[in-house]
Image (cartoon, rainbow, N blue to C red; front, top):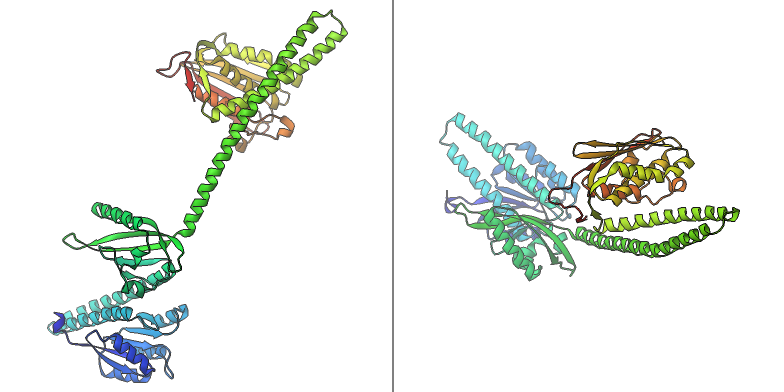
Length: 542
């Protein structure tokens, strides 16, 4: 049925203040309505008994029977009438008032002073619903009783679903931490939910009267960027996600996050853009602070690594000079006639040489660590390197230390286990593992096994010392990590870190098995041949 053929809808406006009734009548003047005015709840009930209304607009606060009581009586005495009721009140969105209003049978709630545009929009919805209901009633007159019952049930279900949807939508939009919006294809705002006030400082009526207000709050380059992103997304059938800044009414810049979708006609023409936006200024500030801290952290790590490199080289120079001087002194002592003074000097030189060796080892560890961190750990593979021979040679150098701590060395190795390896780096691996076993071996025997397994070679170093738990094993190969306190065992916590890096650089792996009080076994597995395409003597950068 065309609009021109529909009868005028009648609405009832209830308010005890004549000027409020006049204001509501003016606001609704542009709609083709028959408006009946009542100044009390009792008068409203009398009108409702006599005629049908498309909608009731009722003030909550009235002397005598207030709006809540009138709504309750309407629902009790005319349960089948189902006339929609919108409450009006000067209270500012008080939750208790809203909840009580919905419980009394209201379908919506408007605060005074009522925005004319919002009032007309809501009234138009229920007037349209009334006309549809009237059209259905006229159709029902031509149907049988059973058909009318079925249609009546369906109509009630549809009305209840519509009213429930209206209430749910109103509550959701009123409590969202942001703004629901609809704009036209030219990005002029057509609708904004009440959240726009907290978001921008402007009321929904400001955007209704000035559709281009929203884009004026944005930077021109952001508007252009988002328009292009939206066009591409709509062509591909995607949602548009945008992050940009606006200038609030109080001149505060704020970051917005928005997600929207295009609404198209059946012919594929873009009709509207609908979506949601919220303020992410605090999140952006946290992100900027995180980035700033990350830059500072990276710079601190770079400065630390640079200091380690410089300090290592600076320490290496006097140590080399001191080591040479000790060697010269040893030769001069050897040239003197034998005697007690010479023996005592030899002991002092041996002790000094051992300390120099320890210092040189620590400095070498620092140098290797800085090379690993900066990606400059070098390998020089040689053909026919004998792992078994290296193990025996390193073990021979540790015999004195092993005797001193009461941990005899037991070696089980064939004459030769050959491979393409860096001999010096392999010696460093064996030295680190054997030194570690003697340090934590608790005065018990240390075993070394070497075996050849096809294209792989395997080295195992096992002690019967203090062992370690799962937490220690998980972090054992980290930089500067120690299984126990350095107060009792010393060291920089770099030996196992360097060992793993060297072994993995040669294509192998190092594993550990251990339990507290049951010692530890370190297993190194190395490929005997270099990776395909790598030649002997080549310098590999890692």
